[in-house]
Each structure stands twice: as C-alpha cells, then as structure tokens.
Image (cartoon, rainbow, N blue to C red; front, side, top):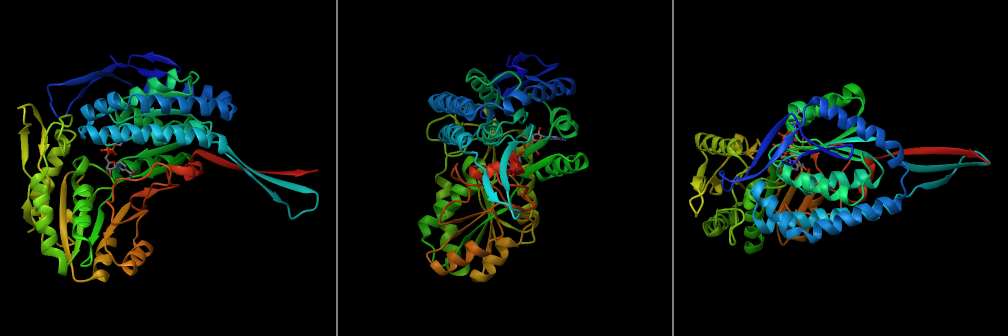
Length: 479
Ligand code: NAD
C-alpha cells in the first residue's frame, strides 16, 4: 500500500482507495492511503514546524535537492511514464513527454533558487537606502487535478520549494500514483522532514481542510471552475493568498489563407490528443467560408486514421477517457449537441472494450459541424474528445466568435497572413496565443495561465512563478 507522507514519515490513512487503470478496469494500479481531516491537520502542522528552518535554507541546498529530483525523474521517464499512462489513460508517448516536462521543470526551478534576486533603489530621502527582497510566503497548500498527474504537481511543488516554502500537496483522487512517486523522489533527494507533506484523499475532506485551515498561508489550485470558486471564497474569507487555473473553451481559428495541412494537424492535435482532456484543448474550431468544406473533409479523413485503444499499446493515438463519470459527461454533451441541431460529422461512439477485449472507458473522437456559437456545446467545457465547428464569414467574425466565451486560457489561429496573425495575437482575449500551432503543448520555462473565468492571480511557471510563491519586502536603512 502507498502511504501518505507526513513529517517525513510514511503513514497509513483511515481509508484506502484503489487506483484503477481506465484502459483495463480489471487492472488495479495500486492501493493508496486516503487521509482524513485529522491527518490533513497533522500535515499542515508539520509543514508549519518545518517552515522556519527551510525558509532560511541556502539556495545551494534547494538547488541540490531540486536538481537531484529532476535528474531522477528524467532517468526514470519510461517507468514513470508507464505509471502515468496506466493511471490516467493518456498514451505512452504523451505520458513520457509529461514526465520529461516534470524533470525539466525541477531543473529549471533548481536554477531559480539561485537566481532569487532583489533590487536596491535610491531613496528620495538623503542618506537612506531602499532594498526590495523576496521572501517565501509560508505553508502552501497545493490542490491538483487528474489530467496532468505529474506535470501540474511539479509546476507547483518546484517553485514552492525553490523559494523556501513548505508544502502540503493534495493530488486528485483518480491519479495518486504519480504524486506519490514525486514525494518519494523528493524525500530521497534530501528534503528535510515536514518540508513536503503528501495527503492523498477526497476534495471534500482533505481539500476542504486546506482551504479552511489558518495554518495554510497560500493555496495554488488547478481544476474546475466550480471548485475554484470555493477555493476563492474560502481564501478571501480568511485572507489567504491564492491562485486559480481552471477550465477553458479554447477556440482555434482557421482562415481561408491557412496552410491546410498545418491547420488540420494543429486542430486534430489540440482537439483530440490526450483524449481531449487538456485544459488547453481546442474544442471550438472557427473556420472561414472559403476553406470550411475542404478543412472539414480533411479533419474527418484524419480522424478516421486515429486508433483509439489501450493507452500503453504501441500505435495508440487516443487512450481511454479517465473514468466512468467523465465518459458519462462526454456522452451527455454529445446527446445535447445532437438535440440542439448540430451535425455529428464523425465519431462520438463509446466502445466498451479495447482491441484486446479489455473493458475500459473508450470513446471515438467526435466532430460536430454546423453549430451555432450559442449552443451549449460551444459555451460549456466538455473535457473530452468532442469538438465543434462554427462557420465564420471572415476574419473579423472569426475573431469575435473566438472571444465569445467566458473563458480565456488558450487560443489559436492557422493563417499565412502576417497581418491577421499580428492582429490576432493582440486582440485574442486569452492568456496564451498560438499561431500555426496547436493550442495545447507549451514550453516549461515561460508563463502559463489564462484570463477571464479561466484563471485568477499570478501566472504559473517560468520566472513569473515567483510572483505567487514569494512575498516582497521593502527595507529602508539610514546609514
Ligand atoms: P476538480 O475541480 O474536480 O478537482 C480538482 C482538485 O480539487 C482535486 O484534487 C479535487 O479532489 C479537489 N477538490 C474537489 N472538491 C474540493 C473542495 N470542496 N475543496 C477543496 N478541494 C476540492 O477538477 P478535475 O476534474 O480534477 O480537473 C478537471 C478540470 O481541471 C477541468 O475543468 C480542466 O479544464 C481543469 N484544468 C485546468 C488547467 C489550467 O491550468 N487552467 C489545467 C488542467 C486542468
């Protein structure tokens, strides 16, 4: 059994959860301890007790631990990728790619531990000096979703630790395995007891305690809008610092002048890879009249070549949906789109088994055409391999449709026009804009995040992560 990590000790929880492989539901990845409120309080107390010393640790100590963790993650990419694909259902190449990303993030933030700089600014008063420095915030609660089981915990953990904070990590219930592996790696890399505490368990218990407990100074959350709103309300009520990364309804615009192959490859990747379960997936394709029919034909032809199968089987393009509940949600939105009058151009069929006959949550990628912007399929996040197409008469209408959403995470355009690409980059209402690239798939050393209902607070990743994981102090000295 895989246990929780509290104050440097592996401890059993009052309950156990079985981690199920969505590619073959008979396969149990492992049994994982589930913490309750009392154990979560122990973890928070351990993090508080460890903060004083860790906050004054040397940058060299933090560099060494994070760099060693990054090296181990990279060295074990095949094994950790296999675990990730087995518990979450993305394909093995996608899972290994995610593990490599996590390894690189650790190494990037190892360097950032050395680079936390400050500023010296002349005072407006004679004989006075002003220094601006960055200090850790304290105990940080990290709450993560199931769709990036190693990358998201890492992109929160690595900066939190690099800047001298202590951490209580609560991973998503569906994918505790990758987070457990991270805790094990960091402990063996030399992290002192209590600096990182892992509490696997339910959102309504473990997560809720992290939100309510005054021992947690800051909360970094990634997940759905509904849960994010709870995080915000609880954090505001007790004055905790917080940041939220939430859902998306990301558009991908295809203009008449696009290179058809580039547009099709980007749209198929963004819409369907990782089973459409990426917050940066494009679920709305906004296509201008002159290319519309050719583009749809090419996307449908490409979709017919995609193999939906066991995530760990060589040659699989699309793995299963993560669990039964998510599959039911995907199918419900497919039914809603049909009822609203959208045309199902391809896919949308649940498959009870894979090619080897193993039971799993398989769904063929679905494409809806002739949809209206007002339909629910174009307004609400499905979070599955379900994409809809909206016709636009020209660039201006396409841009307006792209921005017609409460969300603003990622957006993309396929065009060979410098004028339209430049205009789109400036006028797209999203945190990330892609030109002739899929909306999903980002670098690990630059800021990540969105606008509008998709995000709240400072950006994650890259140098910008310091905005959340440190607090600024301004010191005045009279010589
Ligand atoms: P979710 O909101 O159901 O769960 C996220 C986390 O919150 C989990 O660890 C869960 O246990 C916890 N939680 C649930 N209830 C809680 C409560 N009452 N108090 C505290 N914590 C609680 O989201 P999910 O289904 O795991 O993830 C899918 C969502 O995540 C999608 O909406 C997706 O767009 C979003 N997402 C966003 C980004 C981004 O960076 N913007 C990245 C990945 C996923």
